[in-house]
Image 1 (cartoon, rainbow, N blue to C red):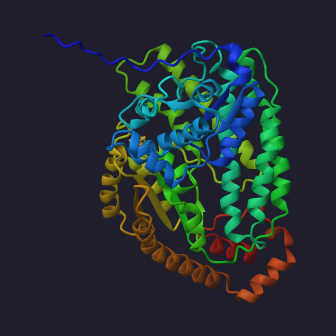
Image 2 (tube, helix red, strand yellow; image 1 turned 180 degrees about the vertical axis):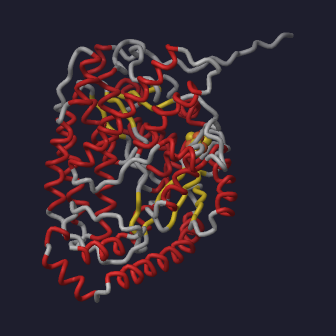
Length: 500
Ligand code: SF4
């Protein structure tokens, strides 16, 4: 007897209608709390109710493991578990139907060799397992600013929304950079965190009140030309001005690289490693999300320039991408300038490619691809960091490839201090102790740099402190210390003070 076959059908979200918009909340996540707060402002600006999912916890790993395939990479497990736990708690309080009606989830998506292209399938599998198959998920394609309205018209992924999210990411990056440059040196413990909270709340309002234009090209032009966000960052600068720092504390500088989600995340998902590094006496260089967006913007140029016939149409397209790229980097630099040029510059995409090219081909996509190698070398060769801590997810194929290439990099650059940390979510002691071993060496290097810099100044520490007292502005968090060829802040600062 023939058995009935149930064919696989891909997930199709129930419609989210325009009329449901007022009563529905859009859930999202995957960035830091600062970025998410600003993105929430963007949603509110366009009359959506939105809220970020609670920050990832260890319990999310367990929930994710229960419901999706066991070979999934750890970011997929954590983020799926986070949605699962949120929905479970809502169902427990409000019941299933109300949860299905009250929320939709928006997540970034893409296609490519890594699981990022399949996140939504993991979410679907988990929802099915929870008996919430009717829950609505929508994808924000990371390479399309202007998508067709989602079924029902309740959510329009259009230029005002996408531009708002991109600008929220840029501003969130600048703010995060200020945080990590300041907190390790703050004189009053907790002041940076307080200013960060005030600044994020203030910028939330700024995004919430952003002027919106009906013409999408007008909207694009306004974002590039207007001083609206730079002015807001000047207000934030005043808040940071109030923080006194002591940059003569010798601390190794640790650059964070690795898989996109793990390196960006701040919480249990990566053992809170950035805070842990700070508690161990380091200064952390967090990875800006803007580098990833810059990569997405730049890579079409490589594909176009590799075409056998470069005709006028292709040349025009390339010129347009270059122009957009200039505007993008220029915008980021305007934001940096509003904060006294203290936040770090974005690395040049061509330079990252060139640095990585002997070890990893730039067309090998997935994960961070060649950027993982390019960034480690960039920080090392330009003396921007004493050490690189690379966060590698358990069960991540693209990252495993990049990490494998790093073995060759280390063979050619044996003095590059590199700590590849595999993150499974449940092996914290192992991961942190591995990082600590390399950190011990980085501490020695930062101490040696300081001794050498002090010798160059020919001054005593007491005299350097006197110079510092004479120039109170140098003790502000917003004072820019020029790079004098050392990775650690204290060494550059000592040389700078000697030159005043
Ligand atoms: S890069 Fe690796 S960890 Fe990140 S989504 Fe892709 S497969 Fe998962």
